Image (cartoon, rainbow, N blue to C red; front, side):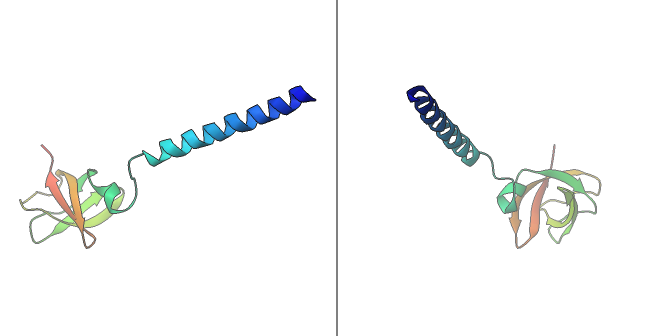
Length: 93
């Protein structure tokens, strides 16, 4: 009886420690959704992108995008920021 009680208590303690470790590791992961998750993702320019705007295909979706330099259609782009649901992109080298 005593052995079974010690076994159950030990099992519960080890399981609790495992859940705490998993929870702490989950909080250290990189954000993968929302604005923060889009920064650094790459995509393809579907139209010419310039300061006035254009279209880019990023993360499986077509976005309105702007760039300080002109980026030709078909070029690979990387997302640097998002402002009012508009991607700010740069051409990749």
